[in-house]
Image (cartoon, rainbow, N blue to C red; front, side):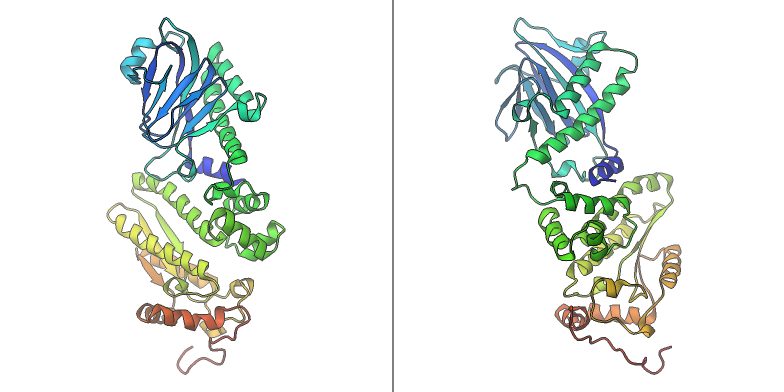
Length: 415
């Protein structure tokens, strides 16, 4: 699975035709989409696009434009300064023909263009559309008339013109294919100054594969070493390129994507008034963790998000619990190149963490920490100065450092 396909599937973005317009000069349309992104493609004549804060632009045949911001008012005009009519139900009732085309009569030259929309749940920030510029242009003048985008556009306009059996279904799917081609073309031609994000990371083959793996197995406890081995680069190369192109470490990105998945599931739980979210963080959330700061920061973020969501969900029938285990008997310490690991008497088994987490969830706890020692440690780090916690953690977290975690027998009274 690639990351772009996964985002489109998870967010359920869908396209539909607003109008297939045949307009004769002078004419003007004033459009605002209440839910989703607007999309326009010119197939004959010319169309002027005006968006507040952007220079007016003349669109020629083959030009497409995507306006990803929900509710962005924009004008489509035969010429700058022409009066524009609001695109609404009364205009469609007046001008739409029996074949479904919208015809604007006039004495002047004709233009032909498509108006479409891409809808999605706009209560959540869209993980793709929110990364795009306010106005995204793609023109055949840049890449020629025989690109996949232009071929798809010709297929789409042919379906709109012929009105054959199944055309409505074909048109909706071709619009969604056209959307993917627009994103591909923008990624291929955008300047290197584009801010880092998962979307710009797709321009790099190695990072695109790494993102695809994270999206295909978001439930997996990925380590940087495992991810680097899977994409056949060194650990340092992966970390450097991922940070440069995506703008955050792999662990932080994976945490955010998991929360995105949870947020997308939440509306269904709320409508059914049952269900819940059970997150596993770490006691690392309560202290600075030198040399693995991204790991500690992502866990702290997960705890804060989960505790806030727990409060928001009161009375809805939906629960949210976050569990912070102490050291767990897994390959975590070796995989992350810690110079040592806590002694066996401090460790808990993965099975006991799972059982503890389920009990905490059933009791509708907002935050739960496993075991007396882990709870005492979490309590102590919350009361101690953060700089002191970081200095203590540095001893066992620093690669090649001398561990300060006790390695001898347990203190008296500890089983």
